[in-house]
Structure formats: C-alpha cells, structure tokens
Image (cartoon, rainbow, N blue to C red; front, side, top):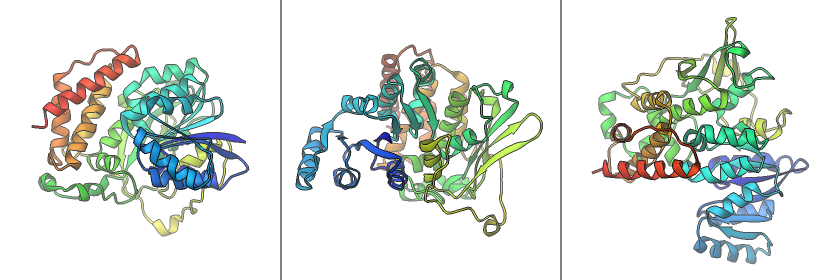
Amino acid sequence: MQAISVLGSTGSIGVSTLDVVGRHPERYRVYALTAHASVDTLAEQCARFRPQVAVVGSAQAATALQQKLTALHLRTEVLYGQQALCDVAASPECNMVMAAIVGAAGLASTLAAARAGKKILLANKEALVMSGQLLIDAVAAHGASLLPIDSEHNAIFQCLPAQFKRSLGESGIAKILLTASGGPFLKRAVETLDSVTPDEAVAHPKWVMGRKISVDSATMMNKGLEVIEAHWLFGAPADKIEVMIHPQSVIHSMVSYIDGSVLAQLGNPDMRTPIANALAYPERIDSGVAQLDLAQIGQLFFERPDFARFPCLKLAYDALQAGGSAAATLNAANEVAVQAFLNQEIGFRMIDQVIARVMDKLPHGPLADIEGLIEQDLLARSVAQSCLS
C-alpha cells in the first residue's frame, strides 16, 4: 500500500489524481490533501479519501475547513501555510508526492519532497523551470525520484530507453520532439490578437485547465516552459528540443533516434493517463481513460510554430540559452503579466512585451541556493509590476 500526498488536490491535476487513486484502493491511500482556498471542494475530498492531514493557505481557510470536517465527524488534522505544505511533502507517513500546485508557490514543497527522498510526481513545471539544477541536485543527493506528469514529458519518458541516464548522445537520441496543440489562436489572424479577451484565451480546444495555464497555452509560454523543463529532466540542450504543433493532441510527444527511428506516445487527451503511468511505474494500471480509436481520428497534422504568432515561445528558448537566473526571471514576469491580463489590466499581446522588458532589465547570473532564487523571483515580479503601467 502506497501513501500519497496530493499538493493542489482541488485543481484539475489533483482531481484527476484522486480519480485514478480512487480506482485502486488496494494499492493507494491518501496521506494528505492540500488546497489554497477551495474549502468546500477540499472538505468533499476529505470525506471521500479520509486523509490524515489537510492543508490550506490561511488561518481563515483552516477555521472554515475545520468546521466542515467536524460537522462530517472527520478526524483529519487541519494545518495551514507554506511550512505545513513542506511538512506533508516530506512526511515519513507518505511515499509519493503529487506536486500539482501551480506556479512559484509550489517550489518550496517540491524541494522539501526531494530532500526527503520521495517519489515526486511533478505536475508543477514552474518548480523545475525556476530551480533547475537545484532541484535536480536535491533529487540526486537524497535518493528521490522525479517522474513527469505533463503529458508531453511523460510521453518522452515513456519513449526513452529503459536505462536512460539523462544523456541524449550516449542513449542514441538525436532530439526530443515536444508536441503542442497550438491553443485557441493557432489560425486566428495575428493582427486581431490585440483584442483577445480573457474568456477567449482560457477556452482551450482540447484540455480543461486552470485559467493561468490556459493563457500560457494560448501564448505558447506553456510550451516554452516545457522546453526548459525538458532540458532539466532529460539533459537535453536547447538545440535538441524541437516544438511541433499538432492540433489533434493525440501524439503527446516523440523521441527521435540517430538511426532514423521516431518513437511516439499516443493517447486520448486525458491527464489521467500520465498520472496513472507515474503512479504505478514501472507497472501499468487502469486510468479510466478510453482506448484510442485511430480510425475515428483519421488524420494527424503537424506544423512548426511561428515565433511572430508565439513570441513567448522564443523568449523561453532565449532564457534557456542564457542560463543562470534567466528562467526564473522569465517565469516570474510571465506570472505577473498573465494575471494582469486576466484582470483586464493589459491586452493579450502585452504579455510577451512585459516579459521581454523584464528579461532585458535584469542580469542573468548563477543561482546558488533557494534564497537567491526567491530573491530573484521577487525582484523580477517587482520589475514586471513596474512595466504594467
């Protein structure tokens, strides 16, 4: 019986994780569930999965949750705050941690899980984008394992040799091919993108996601962050990671080998597939996802991305090549710009402009520790805020 802490349990990844876990009660139990402020949903999850601990973001949310759990006669311990997140991620009571907190807020708890030697199911790409070598080193130093949950990175993981050691050349790999849906504006006239509304930007054609990550998909910053994540997960340089737009979202990513072979992982666009793969690895378990019907799909299409349409993707490649703190700066500036767009403070095409200005203003030196990383993140957010007016 494996015990899991689900960080960000009320988000789309957390809900999908609990769906898979619930299908296999003989294999998994839930140690901890966490949410920032979605008290009602968290209480319902606690009622079903009976975790030992539930964590929320504030004292006010903790009081509200405790009242609901008391009314349900549940003995789940209620905690709140960043340290509580780190504690449940590192607790000896759990074997696995689903790291599904969106954005920089998930960094500290993911590092805590790594330093505690956990099996980490990494759905928070920003943690790896920001911390890079710090997280990879922590995983190696403490005997943790890092399994990707992003559908693209999980697909790559499934297509790699069994004994892959983060070295493309030694494994006979020519390049990694990250597929992208292209988001809701793939065919929309570029000159009309200035008038995009938040509701239009979050209407993803294939995936049901949170508002922030949906905007990232529309700008393709999401794919840019995945390029950086692929670099750290698989030891791939920027020139060996190619993005390919594939609107059907059936091929989730591919690995191209030096002998001319290309291995691809296909499946219906449902996050329960990569979640089930990582939960049970190296075994396979039922995810609840329907089998793929290739005859019904009929045709698959591919095209290369246009940086004029998707400048955020180019900015991410630039950050990866710059190294040092550039990726942390990129991520922080993007979070500020996207939130400003969702708040209708700036237009859609201002997102990449804000990020570019912040990248130009800040140096990209090395990051030696998490304190320096947090300082860089806060500085980049401050500069980004100043660029909004």
